[in-house]
Image 1 (cartoon, rainbow over the protein chains, first blue to last red):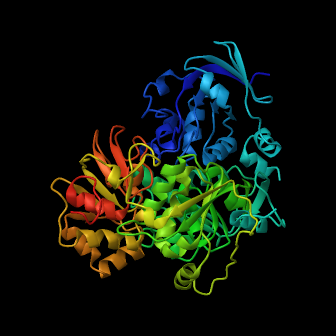
Image 2: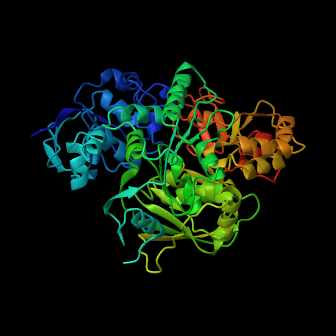
Amino acid sequence: MENAHGHVFKYGDNIDTDVIIPARYLADSDPKALAAHCMEDIDDTFPGKVHKGDIMVGGKNFGCGSSREHAPIAIKASGVSAVVASSFARIFYRNAINIGLPILECPEAAEQIQDGDEVGIEFGTGIITDFTTGKTFKGQSFPEFMQDLIDAGGLVNFVNSK
Amino acid sequence: MGMTMTQKILAAHTGLSSVSAGQLIEADLDLVLGNDITSPVAINVMKGFSSDGVFDKEKIALVPDHFVPNKDIKSAENCSIVREFAKKHDITNYFEVGEMGIEHALLPEKGLTLPGQVIIGADSHTCTYGALGAFSTGVGSTDMAAGMSTGKAWFKVPGAIKVVLTGSMTGSVSGKDLILHLIGMIGVDGALYRSVEFTGPGVSALSMDDRFTIANMAIECGAKNGIFPVDEQTQEYLQEHAPGKEYKVYLPDPDAVYDEVINIDLSALRPTVAFPHLPSNTKTVDEIDEKIRIDQVVIGSCTNGRISDIRKAAEILKGRHVAKGIRLIVIPATQSIYLQSLREGLIETIIEAGGVVSTPTCGPCLGGYMGVMSAGERCVSTTNRNFIGRMGDKTSEIYLASPATAAASAVAGYITEAGIN
């Protein structure tokens, strides 16, 4: 089953949380207000161009820097259905799982998928398909514990279920 | 198989006799920390929990420090949320304006962070407390909420890089230069998902303030935590700041497994500057072959706002004046550091030199207020990140450096080493 399908917004290595959502907007934690400024310091067209279901692709160390959960919240509230990167910074990785933003590590996909490509992802298998080029990639699936956390719908439900 | 210092602390907090890298565990927490940016989000998340209580009112620290004294109405509202939550749950360690400081300088000073503890904080620089031999790491607001509620957090046990220090630093070289050097060597993801364990005879040559600075920036090479062994200096610090408090010291096993070993001779280090827009983009002052003119200098933050940092800056500024047109902003990290600086005459020296001194706040470090830059401006800053737009306009530039280099550059008007002008 395909869980995410959309066009790709591609960025480079070390996309930090300050560019995902600049601190000048952090006094507000409303997801929609954050989404309006998502990525604007490196791509001010992103908030206007992104559509529900679109996919963000980054290079290595995606989400480095500050622990602000506002970063995955801003990406999710923009409508992005998944983030694929070569690697993720660890706090961003935790935060994304905890708030239910699907993320996949896949260096080959991160390298070969191009900006604007039409891509579909199956979370269960980690299969990433680039419909524009016809290539498929296998992302790293989550360890069982994290899959349970994701299946529970994030950390809040997970804590409540215990 | 032997365990690292970090692995031993995690095992002890999980009730297991041993853990190994890659294992997923749930650990008991000794302290859960949040600030005025991250706590309101966590408090909102807690509304979704079936129980709205906190696991232990004495093991939670709430420190409004990023945008306080409140910079605008929204910041004021965030602080109100934190204040009301602290009141409702009778949180012992809530620090109001007047008694607060930048969280990572304040909590060790108050004796709340101890060797052997497991600490999480909804702030990436929570790794600072590794200077005292604690396992401490940054998390997001949802993890903070779960931590406040259950007293537990899940972790993937990290592998580690061992950094062996030898010799001692010379001239104006400080802990900041060491950590910038290390980040420059291994890159901003060089320690991703792993611990950085500092060891070797050179550790004893580092002051506690230097160790706080070094552990603080472990996150800038992607590390889960940075950690130092506990030695006589650590014990002296704890006698002063946490008298009578019990703690447990963990040493790595002699056969602990490390992914990588890096040797650094402290005597070979030179003042180091990280150029825009990554902390790993480092050059020593000897490698800077042009006059990089600046507009602003910031000395402060959880990285370098401690008393030895303010002393170093004042020593360089004494009897001199900042270059014409340069804005020097000095921010002692806590009320106690501010008062000590005042008593030692450091504040007077800084003001006479043409600098301004602010009440404790994270302020300019993350482009909040108190030193935001306009398009194309340049700042030499003792803070920890020089990402695009971090301190203001997306075309402004941040050069990360030590307090000595920052103060010397304020006097010169361009980036320079202390003691040569």
